[in-house]
Length: 193
Image (cartoon, rainbow, N blue to C red):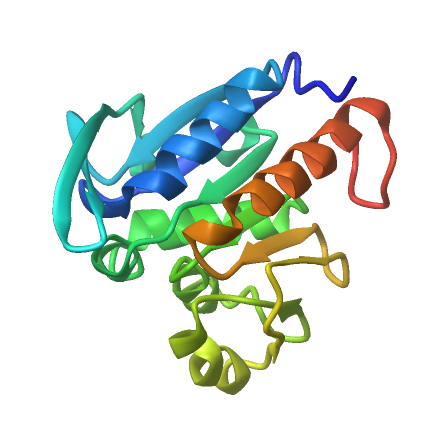
């Protein structure tokens, strides 16, 4: 049985604009695998999620990203949502956190528009990934090899990047996330500790 027992994963979202299904399904997958999901945001309080353009649920923030240490987390999950990701890529604390996680070789999982944040953190050059289709040119211009696949695992860097296109890909995305993170516990993989 695959387990994330003993692992804490950061999920990063802006105070408003995260895609409801991305956040909720990723959080639930981590919980069901025995891991601890912690929601980081650029401000304390609650995160307002959306189902495309309609307000959905709110989620309690566990910590402010600018006050958080990447070393406290085994991996980073970046849910999508156009407005939320766009706000995050303008926040120096969020970008620094993503950059530090990538540089430290932690698994980073990004879905939908979330690879915009990876571009801002200069973490896609020479990597193969997927995204919401409208990000293709942005990713290619940033030095990535863009593919149109439900989920893409790229291990050609300091740590694995797991990417997916949209909420319809969430089952495969979370399966890959859990599988990759479980390897941290067993020491399998060139990036595991």
